[in-house]
Image (cartoon, rainbow, N blue to C red; front, top):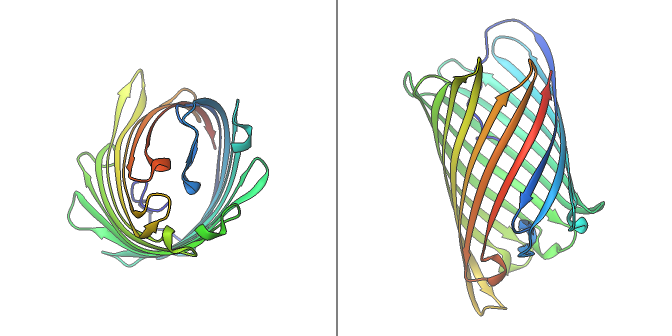
Length: 293
C-alpha cells in the first residue's frame, strides 16, 4: 500500500510502456494464528506455505503524467488451521503527475480476500496524495485516504473510514540508506456502534543496503505502533475498548541469481487491550524465494 516503500523517481522521456512480474514461494511459522479483522486469535502455533505473484504495467504518457497498474495474488495454506487458508487478490492503479517541485497523484485499490475458499473480505481504497523534496535529503508525502470494507462473516463490522497520513524520508546515502517516519490518523465508522473507533498510527523504518559477497544485501528494520480508541461500550467488558499495538520486524533480502532473491524475516507483535480477545502477543518467522523479470 501507499507509503510503505521509498518514493519513486522517474526519468524524463516521451510515451513508453513497461511490464514487470514477480513470483514467490515461501514458508512461515506463526506462534499465534489469528484473523485480525475478526479479533480472533487461536493462541496456537502453525506453519504455512505461502505462494504469491505480481504483475505490473507502467505507462508514461509524457514527461508529466504516468500510470501504474498492479495485480497481486497470494495464497497461504496452513498445516493445521486449514479453515484459515487465505487467498487475497489486489488490483491497484496509481495515477501520477510530475509538477516540478511537487508531485501529485491518486491511488485506487480493490482487495478481495477469501478464507478456506469462502468469501471473507472486500476492501476499496481511494487516496489522493502530494509529495516532494523539502531539501536535498528530505522528502515528504501527504495523503487523504477513504476506504470501505465489508466482512462476509460479520456484517456488523462493515465500515467506511477517513484518514490523513504523512511520511517523511531522510536519505543518508540516497536509496542505499534512508529513514522513513510516518503518522496516520484514522476514523472508522462501522455498522454496529461498538466497532467504531479512531486510531493514531506511528511507524519508523530504516532501510540499509550494503555490499556482501559481490551482491547488494538489503536490510529493513521497522517499528509500528497503533492506538485504537473505541467510541462505544463493548458489551462483553462493560466499558469502552482501548488497544495499544506494537509491531517490530527485521527483513533481510539477498540476491542469489541475476533475477532471483532469498528473503528472511522475523516479526514480533504485542497487542495490549482491555478486550481479552485482542490481548495477545505473536512471533512470526519466515523465508521467501522470489524471481522477477
